[in-house]
Length: 65
Picture (cartoon, rainbow, N blue to C red):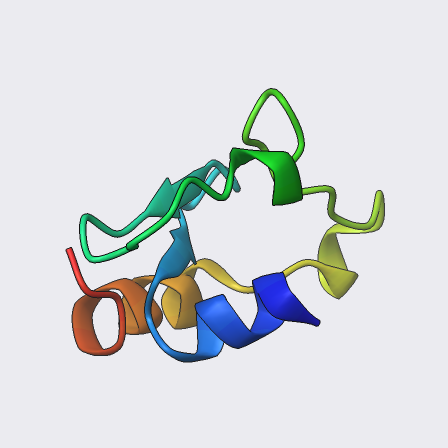
């Protein structure tokens, strides 16, 4: 839930190839909450993965660089 909350508030986002982006506005080290390679685990089936259009929207409109 914590990682989802950070995504919703723009503290985390994803690249089109599902690398996890961390905002400079994070006040604490959250590496212990993330997978070591910082690549989100997504479904094998492409149609179940987040669509690049919506990931780009999130990065442009929600993510706090």
